[in-house]
Image (cartoon, rainbow, N blue to C red; front, side, top):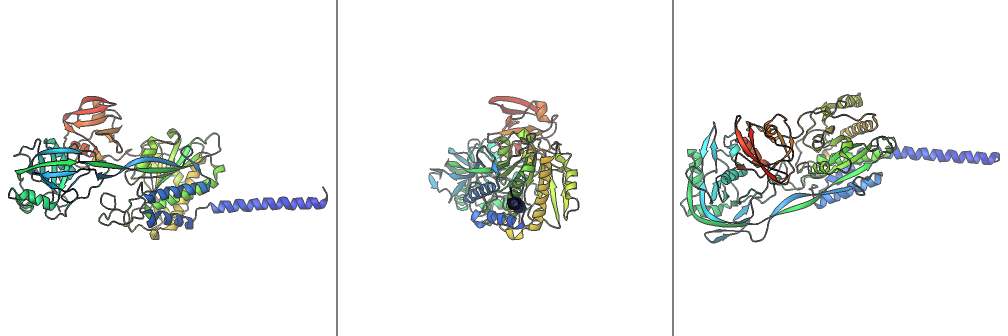
Length: 597
């Protein structure tokens, strides 16, 4: 090769290398976490066209398509076999079926005008006489004795009761824990009533809307609410008005019960509506042969509360409008996408693989993360840590919170090291359980960290918009999450698990409970009864009686249990020292055990 050719060849090689270096630099630069990109994602996710991202809605489907598209553009692989989508079904609504009616002495009432069933009503045809039973109380405590059933026989009859109590506006009333509609239904059912019909106090508007309520199941009896005009007509025949009844009970603080002249027939037909929700799962597969089958999970939920309204979780339930959820949790979802892009660009330097999960239906009770835990796309024992981001867009005073620090002995020192000399302050909390998707992983002995910038007045309202996002603060949080993930991916030893507080929210800690069973209920169970997720106290009443994980409690002390709310009510009636019978279903076999508290 002559000198000219050598020179030309050298220049060519130099240009190729230079071009490659420029491209590498540009690629790395393009993958950096960017405030503009964070805002772009948040604006899309929280736009009014997304409709508040209610699970199963058109807006939610748009978001699923958007996240999937972004993952693909970053070179992230599908995380569920050959798909990014992990679908699951949720109960989303309940509606009136065909042929609902109520007849009062053969006069037919119209549904949604004259009456409405409650979502926990049984379906069927029911006919019987009717009695009025005051506020529907049967109370015998140190603070209060009140029995609306003392002077009447309600077996096989409709019981009509008034909503609320004599102290409806008193925040700390002794009647408060006895006043819920569900509690009054339980009392009527225990007394042998055919069904229960609620009438309103004079201050109340007309009818409750029929709306699906998470956790409540078929109560076993029909449960109806009469319109004010229908209630007035029924009471007038026996010489009463709602105002007279309410004034008597509230002034005298005494029960009022009497037999009514009416025979009531009702047909209730309710249909449960299910929706298709979905988690979005992406995978950055490491090439490291030793560690590539171990995983660090990064998660954020992308759903929100839709248009709000009653029972939606909105803090302004009277306002029906798009709840954008810019901070909750478009901010965390935007963070998931930015981290996916940057981590994918560093794939060759990762040792453990990264699983990126956008969870659906978090607002309905962590349903997406619970579904993933029960149906994992990888060997769950290979998940070495889970990092959750929920509401990371509103950092104040350069401070944010990292929860779950106590769930591994390495976390606190690692966080201190990574955040040293940075322009923010970490508020570290140790408990592994919390009100977001990391709780599902912590319950399975997986170390977790929860990034959160704090609550604010706009939380779960239509005012949670992109205009209030602190982009600089969110970028600081995401840079720390990236450094943390990169470190956990490359460390020789994965973080070991350590227990840091309860593994589930315990409804047994309610102040009205004098006893506990020592269990963690299954909050997502669809079976009739109370399914035990875990025996939380190895020396507690349930363990001593021989109950085990998976048992379904059907009754306590002879009183039927259909769901977790009925379980709570039954537990609140018990005192220390009692020994009561408990009926359970264990894998299809009926058993009776005695539990001593």
